Length: 122
Image 1 (cartoon, one colour):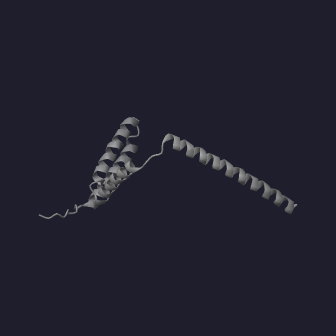
Image 2 (cartoon, rainbow, N blue to C red):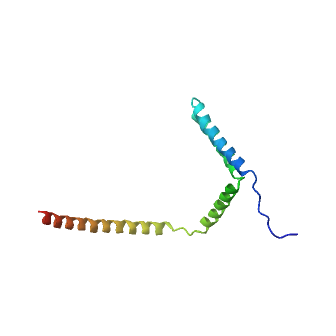
């Protein structure tokens, strides 16, 4: 027995991507052709076509890599230590205070430079 995991082979990827493009095209054309139908039916049809397209795309090498990336991202998001409500409020107040102080400093500098420039120009 071999302990090596054999990489999954993705065959006919080009055909699968062409099928995804065809499904998207059917959705776009069908939405305009059936524009007289109620919006709910068109949205449901587009959602169904999107699910079919995603299912086909996930069977390709790039689609499988994207799904793996999304799974790893979810694992990383679970590792994040989110700030408490109090920490968020304190940080927000600090940022607002710094912005106000900087605005006042820049306003003062602008006023001084404007005054000096008006005296030089005459």
